[in-house]
Amino acid sequence: MLARALLGGLSSSGGKGGQHLIKAAAAPLTPASRPPVSAFALDGRRWAAACWKAPGMPYKIYHPSIQEPERRVILEGSLEGPAKYVPRHFRHQTYIDSIRSGAYLGPDWPFNNLGKGMWEHRRYNVSYHPIPADASAVTGILFHGRLNIWTVEWHEQGKQRIRWFRAQYGFERAKQSAENFRRSLVQAGRVDNRRSEREVRQQQIQTYAGRSLFKKKFAKKDARRLGNSGTKLGPEWKTRKDYKTRGLMP
Image 1: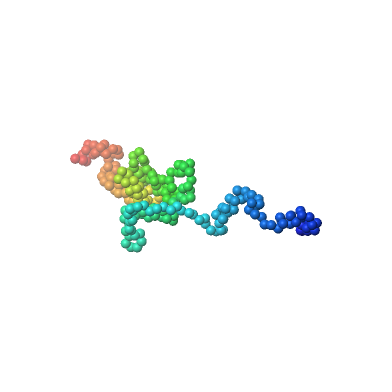
Image 2: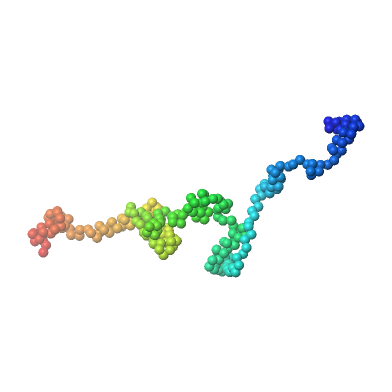
């Protein structure tokens, strides 16, 4: 209202200066007469639409266009159904196709974009290899790189036992054989602190039976050896000598 009153006063004065101000206020601003806009404001307005994301919606990922290699041999296989056919390198081809199409970004995406300082300290992949390749999740199995063997260590009846599995005919083959052997030991009740109550009782019964058989087999069957019939107690050779002296033995 103050501006209107000012313009009204100038027009009522009838001066040329007033008419010039009214025309200048009514005329639109031309590009030459507009105030300059800062570069920061232009950048913010330009990239504002790209940074905007609806709540709950993922960011759009733009994948580079990768051309198909020329003279490529496409393998035909089938991973579904009762009749599966997996030719050589078929799974690798499927893996490469998934990466090229953008459907699979890798097991550690987006951490695979980090620098060398982070990856050089990692010994294995957390997604697909939770433990190193030269280690086993089964108790008592170790790999000795100097000897190139897998060892299975267990305690049986208070004694430590170790069995070797050579890896020269296959690293994973030896590892699987060692793990299967360890499982068979546990199932057979040969590992201390891994037996059930029934297995412990069966071993006690076997121990009693073996002790009874030992006593029966090595018992003194000669009653005279026990000191009867006036014989003397002592070593067996001394008893036999006394028998011969008395004429009781030939």
